[in-house]
Image (cartoon, rainbow, N blue to C red; front, side, top):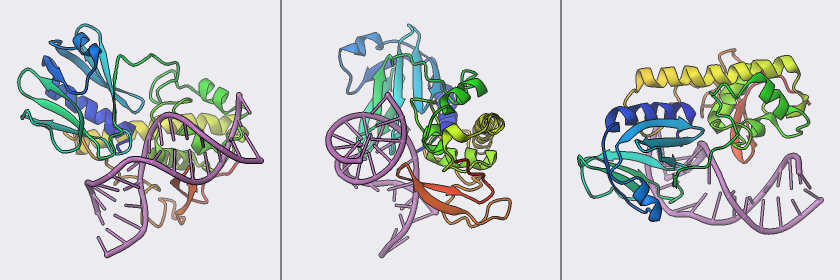
Length: 250
DNA sequence: ACACATGTTCAGCG
DNA sequence: CCGCTGAACATGTG
């Protein structure tokens, strides 16, 4: 549901609300629970499409909301409907993750990965060019492939490709170096601008997604800022919005 | 009422 | 190995 910029804002809000509180209980936890109980929460941050909860002893919990997961903060002991797992703190506050599909995931001490986060310095022009080289996949598929770069979802991939004026159907390996460099800049710009807008307009959200500023990925929107008709098609089983302003490299 | 929506994993095909 | 497709999950939002 929410994408990288939404999750970034959620993490900041959760940190404001929960930092320093001691963990009292974790529902649906295995034997690893002992590594976390009675530990004060030190930091909440985002990695890829996951939220990370860092505790004082260095152990981390990873939370992935998948398509339908939702964060719910409450002051009660009884968890809301569709709760998949929850963190209960010593002061009585409860952070529950609900998901009617039961797909949201809680991972104790997630394995470190070499795949760069979209907003990290590791996701560089050189790295992107290396990933593009020799790939015959559609560029949109590559951008949303979490094994290549973490954090870009369906909606923001469309916004990024519009910003870079590259067609989502372009063959990744056929994108010339200057366009690839522009694509990298577009990734950073679109995501950072979205974080800024969401944290300014909705600093206290921990659920839902803010999409009103999107230039092309918006159902029912007819024209891009450049005045061209917004087309839609399916890539990777998901709706893709684009315009003729975007160059297709084949 | 009704169309539309976000992510991941795995199996199977060519 | 590469890339594509479909299935599974069974609700919320505007």
